[in-house]
Amino acid sequence: MEVMARPPKRRPASRLLLTEVELELMNLVWRLGAATVNDVLAELPARRNLAYTSVSTILRILEQKGVLESEKVGRGHLYRPLVGRAAYEIRAVKDVVGRVFGGKPLSLVRALVASGVLSDEELAALKSTLDRAERGS
Image 1 (cartoon, one colour):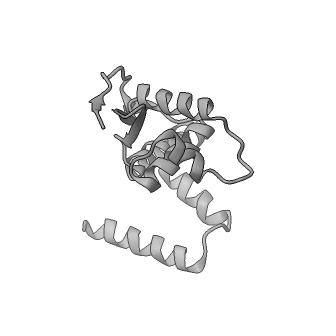
Image 2 (spheres, rainbow, N blue to C red; image 1 turned 30 degrees about the vertical axis):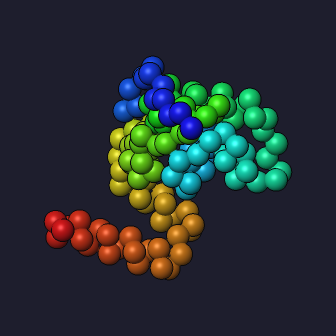
Image 3 (cartoon, rainbow, N blue to C red; image 1 turned 135 degrees about the vertical axis):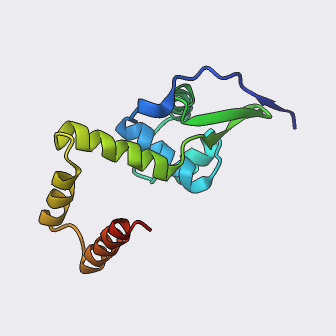
């Protein structure tokens, strides 16, 4: 099996956010660690009817955005994340804080708490996280 890296044609990933379908596929690649188009198709929910060519195109777009890299393996490509899930989550939260909450992170936290979506355990974990941040650890 011949393995060849595809030459990079990437835009900087530092400021790019993903579309809904791009994020859906990235979540699968993050979970799998590395994936071919067929791997991604196999992991999609049965109700999600995406064609092989659609998945292939979206993965190539993610590669162009600089969040995936690929290498040629046999007749296909194996895709690996270049941006970790946690790094992307931070980027997305910063974007939401800027666009939705006027650059005020406290407004995001207040809205999150007021929304009622956090369980008691999650509220306790949030308090613990804030306490650790306050202590500087």
